[in-house]
Length: 216
Image 1 (spheres, rainbow, N blue to C red):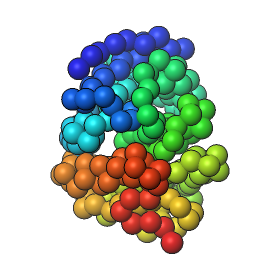
Image 2 (image 1 turned 180 degrees about the horizontal axis):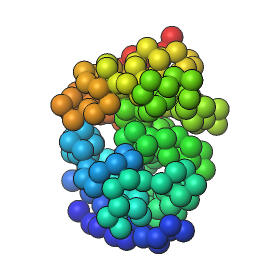
Image 3 (image 1 turned 135 degrees about the vertical axis):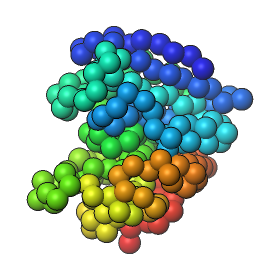
Image 4 (image 1 turned 90 degrees about the vertical axis):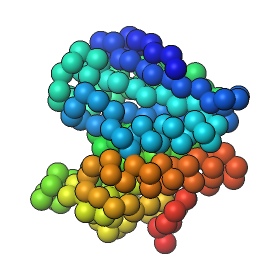
């Protein structure tokens, strides 16, 4: 494991990079959600499973977390910092970018700009709870418009967007895995990790990220 600070327009971000036992077959870069100062169990489970599958894994702490603040800023601060970090991340093989909740939004908005091959969205916050009219569907499908693929892992009872709501906005070619739980997927960490490994295996072997349930 190696930890580094990366200069960004918003201050120093932090990367925690783990290498697999052999030469990496790909690079997975993950961001965190909008609240709290720790990595959640589902993301940590994904890291361990991806390493076992031969992938380099980079966890990115945005500058606001490095500074010890408990609530993150908006896209105007998050996206430039993420872009600066991705420019410094070592890459081998396919690049999959993603994250949890707000981190998934950042990855979707910037996937084309960083040259990603696929996007992984864990608990994508499709809308604020009880406010479906404030949809963020455009962010979720933006990578698809650039010719990239998107795969979502969503909790069955997520108040930020149920699987049915996510399914309704995902076009053909996107992927969706449904696991038990609300917006927090920590209790479903094992299932989340298994879904991500299927995705990574497809990215590596056949270039098809439609693991799990494909949207018809």
